[in-house]
Length: 184
Image (cartoon, rainbow, N blue to C red):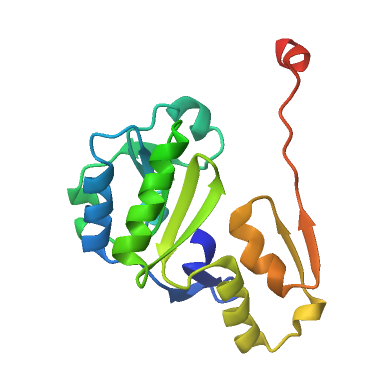
């Protein structure tokens, strides 16, 4: 889960790995985007347990909430002060703002964070060296399977690290309905 920041043992119903982003870094990222036209989703331990995604300036709340199981609530900084944050999603209608954030994060936190550009207007941020590929490697060390026996399934750039490892890859493509289909 969370692009590899959480790994669960479903048979024993327990978390076997987690790696969070330092809370001071999260505060700095939120300060950096404050006042800009960048929205954020914060994925945290308390949020997962309570099925909540904390948000900052989500103008598409109704649309986006259809794609998530749980509530989206406006972030109050105190909600994450004593929490563990595993992933931050940043979105903007302005590509240049996302590119500026990427440059700033690389300059300030290249040793602490990993960034995946989902599309021109969206990035995902996790702790350094966390990815779906790193999760597969972690599980492989426990289960001792061969990577050429594994199939992966994904739909965006955050799946690339997993696709590089697995022999069989399935990439789902999303296509927008035509204007005529939307009217139906």
